[in-house]
Image (cartoon, rainbow, N blue to C red):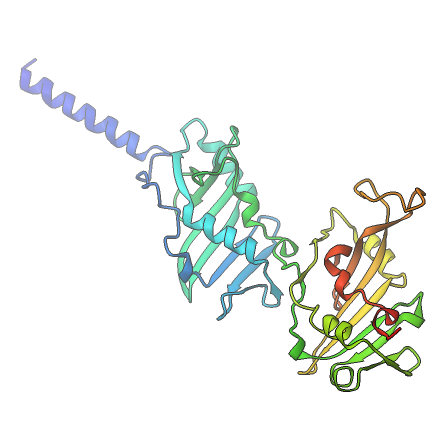
Length: 339
């Protein structure tokens, strides 16, 4: 065989092998640079849409004041949205999924993947599908929409998987902020103790400050310590719950059972714009996590002195509230009246 013919055959063979490798999954897409999944300018992100394979969806939207809302009406926890935006900014390709792992990764993305659409205004910036952790638990399977090459994605400086940061559960995004009202915006405070009505009262901001009086549960005027009434009026800023219970921690039946009881205290905050914010706190039985289990006489408590169940507004959601954090608004009539 002539030397030129042999060279030609070798060239044809190499071209054939190259074509096969290029056409063979999972190598049908060119490998991306490290930042291919990242969103470089998250300050311009105005909306994030999430959808899982169970049919649950969640829309996160940025307000003009840089707060975020979920599904049009739920204030988002700023730490959670900041973590998501930071994650999107930092996403880094670790390695393409290997040929041997390709089908497994695609199966995970197809059955468990969370779709994440990222927008700047109405412009769709990127669509990422987020899977589960890798077997080594040091990365997360992800793929860009329209491609068939999955990648193992990491966040530099973080060891673990990123899937929980893309949750479609609204309750996990909900802000823990319960009250954040300045004194100047308060018209009236009503605090009721159903089991101790004599300690209930209504405080009108103008009347309390001008005349130094509040109304007791029977409508009688009670002279107050104006310093203490002013402390109460100033106490409704930056009050946070410890957290909200989801269905796995507190079932609907358990919530209904608690909320069917008389609350320990109910608080209505009427604002000068006419809005009313409501909070009811319910006593919580001593549990495994109760720290202060014994009273001053060394008797074992039945009621947890450190925490309450809370119902915020008319929403059938249960929150956990620390007594220490809300102590300044858990005021009784006798605390305010002159001695």
